[in-house]
Image: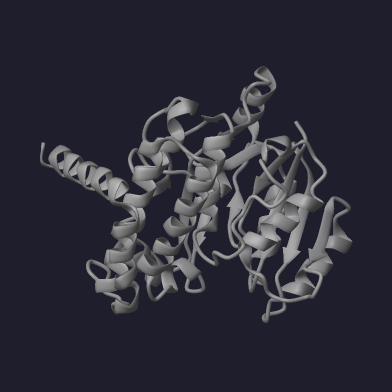
Amino acid sequence: MRVSVVIPVYNAAGFVRRAVESALEQEQTVQVVLVEDDSTDGSLAVCRRLESQYESVILVRHSDGGNHGAGASRNLGIQRSDAPFVAFLDADDFFLKGRFSMAQELLESNDGIDGVYEAIGVHCQDDESRRKWDEKGHGKLTTMHERIPPEKLCDALIEYRLGYFSLDGLVVRRSSFWKKDPFFEELRLHQDTAMTIQLAYYAKLVPGRLKEPVTMRRVHSGNRYLSSSNLHLTTMKMWDTLFTWSLRERLPKGRIANIFRNALYFRLLAGTGRFSGNRPSPTVLPGLLWRTVCHPHLTILALREHRRRRGLSRN
């Protein structure tokens, strides 16, 4: 199996070498695509040294040399990749030994499989990072808690049940991407989550190792996820974007209703600041009423699903 590993790089000068070398340690890696996104910390110089040191590492930048975000950088990396399979790695994370061994076994034994997702672990740089990570309620593994049939995976991800998987734990056939730029470039956060939901709809994804990590997520003070001032607002934007996509693609009504429910829920949380400890954004609340007026049938379905879930949680 030949894999191109796409690594978007932004202000990761102290980490990117470890990421690249962990990818090159895998026998399946034939190419590492570094997409430097106008860093301000010397990352570009580190990337240039890595490109000159390793024949299989290529460095690319956006045509205007500017900062376009992780989504646009991953899209560019996919375009510049040339292996039949694509894997992703954040510049501050690193692969573990044998990262692709089970994925290779599954993908080479069944041409009908488009991709394999596996668990990733967490490596906290210091006690403060560990404290912040634990405050978010995250465990030691990012994984799916059950082995879900491919045809049910999209619904499980939309419904926020049975866990989720990270891009760092995914390897996929390059041909399975449904368009040239599969990542929503307008989303500066959560575009990776949006892409995995879409990919689960378009492609056949199967689980690999779910109880042991194949990659380590490095948690440190520079993580955007830990420092975001309003994750509810950025999550709301992701679900709004997915709702537009679901209508355009004419997804089954139940899936559209669940996406709509999530969009309403996070709009409410973002508007009130409830449960987050972040300041409320009341300007988003009028949109809540507007959406319910424009989509009364979906609102009814969303409320029914909300009541069903509350009933399940009580039981």
